[in-house]
Length: 630
Image (cartoon, rainbow, N blue to C red; front, side):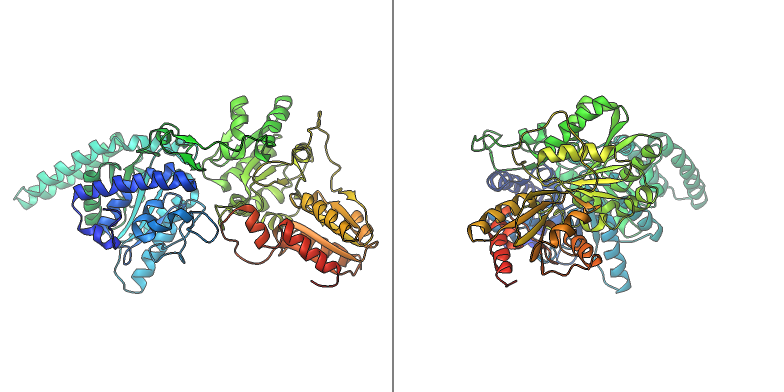
């Protein structure tokens, strides 16, 4: 059935039994395909029946659907004509792992960060009304995204506007990547009891309607309304969504096709009067036992043996520990010696390495849910009372807390440390996840210290330095393994704002930061074979930059190169150029950084070369620069 599906509109004519068969085929295809390519897995298995039901009830060439985050939209891609492209999933030039408006007319809004769907879908609904068009606008939110403030900002506005033909589908699966946290999750559990309230309400309404005497019917209706309000407060404490102006429908079993279709039919009726929230309960990883047993582990996967339920083994060669693991273990060591150190993350315990901290010191580890803004200000409050908080957040997600970092942390000069994992080019997750902008937007903030380690041992030293520097501080480090260097013990702090000279030469100065230091050393060895001698500085600090060291060596050489795995505009290279200009040093300078483009998805080595900062590209660019070219 799936193979013969010529157009998504065909699904609208399917019977319930055909829809169930289609869902089974979509799930089987997902398992087979993602086991070959890797990608987001358990989140997609959980929404198969929901997606099939959506395509049966709506025409998404006409209606609009916004999938929150987008990593739960593989079934949507399969049903909207992209099944044959799945072998290219997350590969360079291939199918994106998220929704992209330029990839398909069925992708109405792109997203890689969470909790934006309600705002976007509401915007589409109001644009429809202003342009006197007629379609349904739907937001599918879940996978932890309801813990973010923006979701409630959207709900608040939608209820206030009494927006018709607008529906929020809450995909309630108890999970983001790690299990959901916070009082909202307890509230959703209470909503399950709402099915009893709904049955009671519907029966009373039906009974009143058949009473023929108008006066009696009116008085009974009023009495029923009063009792309904009282009963709601007992049966469903708060009744949050209806209090916000939504008609609540559910909870619905998201793996029961009949229940889903019935839920949609009811929602369609109520949408003629105002906004509807359809509460759908699903199981992350549904239909594949290993993923259902451990949905966190199977959230994002590499290629795996589908029959055995095991990830494919690596080459077996020993590899250095990841930067994430080094950060996690080092923080635990430091915190066990200092009870003032506390750790905060936004629904990314495993991804940031704070799962190790939670295991060791659970009372001092805080998962705030997908709520980076709250997490930053929460840390600021702790710092104001004498603690040493560290916020472990992916570089791309700290963008969501820009104002809080500036307003709540930096303007008050509070000693909050930001550990920015996945800084630089991250690979297959693509444009929404590349951590390219942190150096540029953090270095403009007063009181902020910004640093990046050349290897995993320097990461340990920077973590210690940041925690005790007495100011806001950020250390950014890349995805993947370290350099395999020895780890010093005990850890010693770094002198604040001081770089180091790794190699001396007279023809060229290369000033590198973070992951690009190793590349600079490799380029220097290549140039030596061509007859050029190079000085290499490991800057260590983007801010405060070691002006004295950079200016001293710039005066000794003919040309200067800056190297960074970040955006060129306003980044580390800009800081070096500003420093030289302030000192009146005029030298030819080459900035090796990511240009002002949107970097696509693909493997990290390939993308680095494509953006001109991979080892091969750097050798060619810098040698040409030395010979009077670029």
